[in-house]
Length: 165
Image 1 (cartoon, helix red, strand yellow):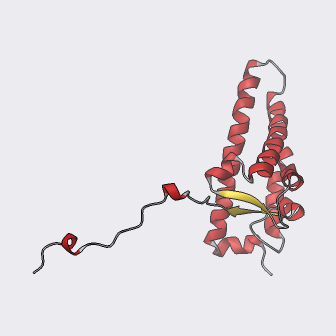
Image 2 (cartoon, helix red, strand yellow; image 1 turned 30 degrees about the vertical axis):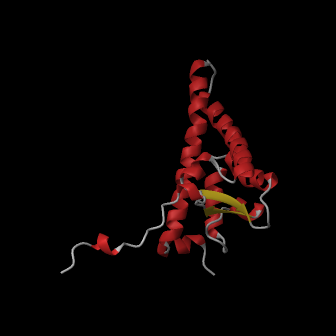
Image 3 (cartoon, helix red, strand yellow; image 1 turned 135 degrees about the vertical axis):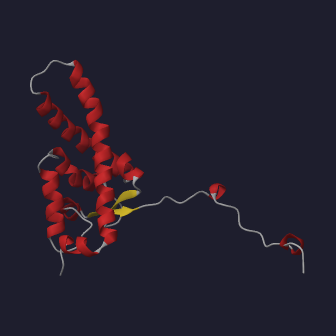
């Protein structure tokens, strides 16, 4: 059986999947870090970098657990059209909080989580915490409401076809 690292070489779809996950994570961490850095810039505390890293981990854990539990995605995942689903029926908050534990220690454990997920045999789209929580991140394109769909093309009438020769 092949690992995710083996398949990354040959599968463009898998590379796109992981690129979308990376972009979603980058968007989410930017959403989290920006207010933290703004608040810390007005407060005089020692070790702002350490406080920012720990607070970002805690906020990211809560943000991801709540958003993915309720909606199946964070803002970053929504932008790249991805969604968290359960492999055992309905997705639960327990599953989303378990899969979000690496975000508490995002600077160490999250890269390790991705690397282990790609190194073990099985579904190459999953991080190790996805395997433990029995979840999967999939591409998701919400259905378009009927009122926004393009109108059906109408057949041309004989006089619309132009002059006859």
